Image 1: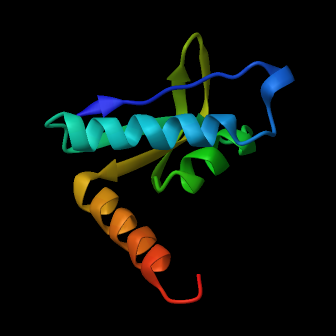
Image 2: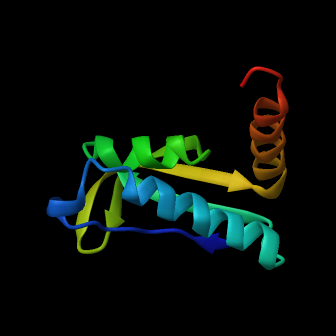
Amino acid sequence: MAKVAFRLSSACQGKRLMTEALVRAVTFCFEETELQRLWADAHIQNIASYKTLEKAGFKREGLIRGGKMVNTYCDYYLYGMIKADYIEISQSKSALRDKPGK
């Protein structure tokens, strides 16, 4: 199991760079290592971060109320992805690519 975390300069935000990087990191973790689970947390007010996680295939698994992130007590969402989720996502994308007319 491993935790995923990311931070991106404001000058680079909104260009899907983090989503692409996260998808590549997830691919590496599940295809090149024996990891079975990835997880991440995102402050409930950081919409861009949790939308990035969702675009990469992570599922919201819960809410931590009054938890500690770095040096701050706040509410945050927990996200996770298991290898079976990754395989399902990969197969779905492959099926879309192989569809005639696409």
